[in-house]
Length: 202
Length: 202
Image (cartoon, rainbow over all chains, first blue to last red; front, side):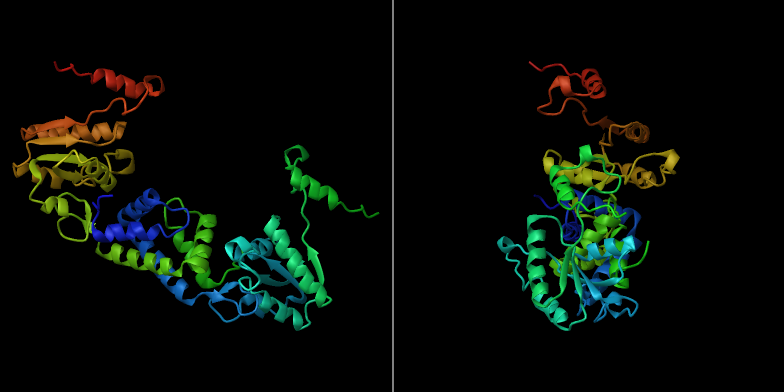
């Protein structure tokens, strides 16, 4: 492709294509928007990315994203140390926190087992998780990985580690979502909902 | 919304929402992607935006985006000074350059007349355009603004300025696109294509 833009404009367009889901046309549109209407915004993005990329690390205990050594959830003294919820991504932690029904700790795997992509226990920091479980505070480990073959395999793998240490592994409930109508629910979910049925308490 | 991410992570998510078409969910996804998989890319974006936002200006002659005083197209001596193509955006210049059928100069309006949004002749730098036309080099002005009510109005307005200076105003041809099948072309385009019919040369 012929270079028509000035070198710096080309550089901006190329750079924004590092973002997931942004191709050359969207990047071009973003660059024009920033240059014509929101240079302040452009500088704000620049500062935030440069600061973030050099300072944000994974929490030393749960692997959540944080610029401190240990994240605020791990440092909190009002949380239940005996309960640990294992999730795949930082976004999952946020989703659970927003539902406000959970007051235990977390462990963020940053992915799921996927031998085909070279992601094994080492990449998910399972050794760090085992070390925390060895400390003996955790009594129940809630496996909230995704309901996919990989997510289920990851949950099973961690469940076996937990059982070795006499910790109760549980899987979060999967079934019909709130307000869901049976006829529109996919058969996989429906099958899980029936297998996971519970007796109605008196 | 409860703040669960660390302050720097929140700042990155907020900053990326300055980009057009990026909401909180996409911004979150972009931040995780950058932090987990492409910190180099994040720094590249940061550098490119900071450099670009402080150095890229509009060309003093045609208003194209450039970090120099005058852009490379305006400086080129191999281009036809008697021909000027007026377009709405820098992307239009790139589209025309890529078709390789044009060797004249450009003028980028950075928009079109739109009184309702407060965009009048001043915002489109029509005074700069008039000054260039007054220099007397331009013999034909090609109006390549978009085929919308605003684009047509803008073209008519500039055409009248050109006529005052005995410069020939022309409008680029609108009609059936290459490979277009009549039955699928909208009626507005079809109507333009029939009005704009040309005699077949022998």
